[in-house]
Image (cartoon, rainbow, N blue to C red):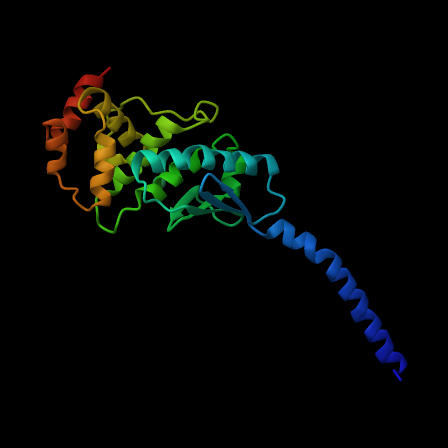
Length: 232
Ligand SMILES: [Zn+2]
């Protein structure tokens, strides 16, 4: 027979256990990644903070299912079929992608809620899947922003556009500055150049000669021609 102390302890454990049993499913529901599969693509979506805006979660998921399959089809059919997006409560950058995993800062999404095409940029990195030392960093980011420019679903509302050419620009400045240069090459020198540059980096056949093969000009000469054609 239990003495008083043991009975009280047992009771307390029982109460705690009941409470735990009651709360556990709620906690698990909120914190588990949602897994969504559509047309052969699986997205594991994990908001670390379960209170992260549900509508915003849905919008980010929609960008994924709108653009990832298109980019796989247009650039690299061997891309991963399964991707994870984490909305990170601690990350103080914007977003990054690595090995099928995308991390987006919750703080950024709250500050810039229309910037949902960070997903478009980051999924392009998964499609790129370049092996190490296969090309130039500026071109990797330039292509990802070129793709955002072409495929983005909400760039206008996000106030996101390619910047006008300025004196201090150079193709090595990466991101949108390089993207605008690539767009000019596509429109004025070689349609499909971005796809060929992308494929070459993935196949590790990218060399400086590729610019000559694609456009008849070396990269620096190409940049000079771009500047000359776009001077105000
Ligand atoms: Zn990037």
